[in-house]
Image (cartoon, rainbow, N blue to C red; front, side):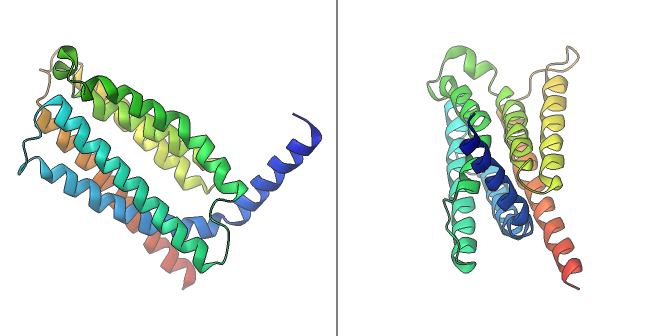
Length: 208
């Protein structure tokens, strides 16, 4: 890395640290929206035929795409309100840090979308793997934002790892797809809602 690139990286990190409070305010409505979306997707399997591996993967990948849309919309709205560029160098740093684990999560889903025989038998692995990779993405983003994001990332990593160990324990029978939907609703619905509510409550106390 040459001196010019090093200075650019340091400037991007400095701006990100200065804007950490702003990003924290943006994160609260994003988490609340993601939580509501996760609960809605988790409840959808009770009304729609989503018991196959392909249907499960499609349901939650579509939910993920909508979640990215929610995050994009809230971030864009905040940038317009603060009269700042949305796709700034700091924003690109954050996007680059979270892209690898999120891309890995999508690639792991491809065999389930194709309806492979082995995928139908182990579709319950997806929630645990997605949680771990999502936690890695949050932890990577946390180096450019406030400390709470890294802690939330560790929560997803620990939760996904624990779920994987519990479901693969020899004493347990492999769970049905309905349990996988429930795990996704809790992990990506309730956890996001709880963290969003925490951010709102702490932000109000800070202003007070």
